[in-house]
Length: 154
Image (tube, rainbow, N blue to C red; front, side, top):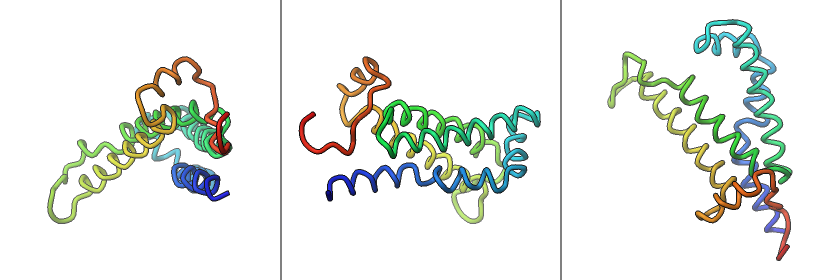
């Protein structure tokens, strides 16, 4: 039982940012999220579509990771999502105040950018496993589930 709790807790930590927190924030503060998205795409319609798509990714892919069904593909999608959101919304290179010492919005954004990529790395490890053989296994069966709550040989 402890094995299953540890695996579930680990998966909760990976997706906890998205489900419930980020998804709930998008729902409760939808217009604010759209305004933030408009900073990257300008069009209100496209910004709304991006927020709805992000909401879908955050809820559905997080649920798949937690349930262990199609979890490897869901983890890959979440990794790509983390990378895209870092590139689109954590553009530290565009800030005028990137400094190593003192107050710096650019440095704060840089750390957020790196955190997104670190989270993407965690999701890629979940998708591909701990070694190179996992990449080939994923490519051969991309929709296969990892069956994380199974104890013993399958």
